[in-house]
Length: 74
Image (tube, rainbow, N blue to C red):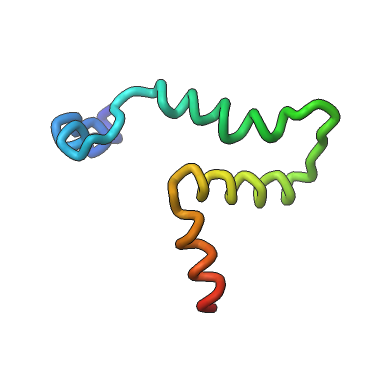
């Protein structure tokens, strides 16, 4: 904990309406990552799984349109 003093600023996190527990992260792991990777009969190459997970995280973080707008602008 001494190496991470900025990560325990609970009053600021609460004021910004940010989660302060691990429950949301653990839940997101189930519905963002595991739900897609653990389909019956599915198998993945590491590079393909990472690319797919990157897109799922973008969508979960409501950054989907931003991502595609940046790609179109490039």
